[in-house]
Length: 314
Length: 293
Image (cartoon, rainbow over all chains, first blue to last red; front, side, top):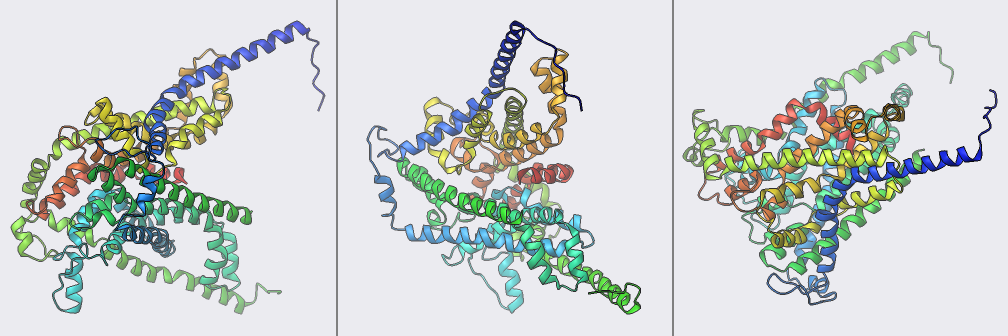
């Protein structure tokens, strides 16, 4: 290729061109700000300022009818440890987090492997996905009656053992959280499965075919080919699930309607109760800060693990 | 290992393996069908219950088939009037259409400013807007409640539209920044040389190029707003502005006076718009999932 021959340009023309380009870039930047401004203004006003305000609030003594002015230091954070039912909140939240990390993923993965290549795969996928489009409040309402003493679960179980069962799944401290988690799994199974199937579709078929020809078992193929290549998707799905588990509210709010200690069923419900039923606004703000810190910490850790795994695959 | 591919024994082995791989698909179909039946039991319960009267519900087993289909309309009318669901569904529809529409449009404009124009430190501006989604919703509740009370936005229709729009901006911005960035530069350069305004370039060059993503994002945000219980229960509790999910929850909360048949019918009614959207626009929902990951 020939070297480009630039015609001689006088310094004045070059300076003029440069000046124009700078002016054009500046104009372009100003126009860009006009395009961004509405979105930025709304987000700043309704999301960013509230976050700062909430953080500041968590260090005050503010209750509903007292002033904002009194600084309370770490009082609200210390008060957290004096809540008599704190251990129940922690245990229930831990059950939610562990359940949300393991169950939808395990069931979703099993289902994805089962459905791959089955006749009518598309219909199966759509039907398993369907609960996901229902509102959590609607799902909770239906399952509230499914778990009722005269509900579907007891009727089916009673028919299986041949005697009448009228257990109150949502009224006993031992079963309420596992029962609501199972409803959560019922609702989120579909999206886990679909995301994992999308991840599997991206795995090249050649190594799998080759392993088949070489006589590898299905388990070996899954363990050594599919699972490592699927790990990035697994992490994305897990991050979504763990955030949903930490912040679970709607289902618990609706299904725990008749349970006396509803406030202890998750951090999110605990925060809602202390803030809006007990009118301890500053305390509620502190719980929200703790919840945010936990969510950000866990999703950050998972993101770091994910990037390590991706680096190893490449 | 050297393999003689014309060796009949080897070929026979290959064929056997291939057949073995085809066969389990029927076994898997049977297992999948059984699981699906178990999975759909709550839907079966839903569909028998909406056709029962309260009396019939309480006297028969929950899994029994209804005596007739007639009580359905009565259940609908009861849910509609007792729970104030008529008003609530109009409210929620307007929140969801306006909130999702405005959020997607404003996010598109912002994404245009970030990707197609020469903005210094575009990345920092993006991070600033996107920072809004790092926190769980609980972080916004107390400040929004307090701010809404102070400014009179509490229990107002406009306040709900504004808050939903703001919450729904960051995620579409993340996605659209990617899809706008992938559109060829030549398209807008050429239009600008021809003298098109930036608005023209945005509205008639860039937006049509990302139609699929825009529809998917609108659907995702619409569903989120329609399904929301948390924000609407705190910021809009009064009957004139309450959302469909708050109305449903209020109905369920008084289940002692309202029969389960009516409450379950109400929960079905509250899901009709999102289920219909899903059935008719499944393609966009599924592509929306790919956007999210």
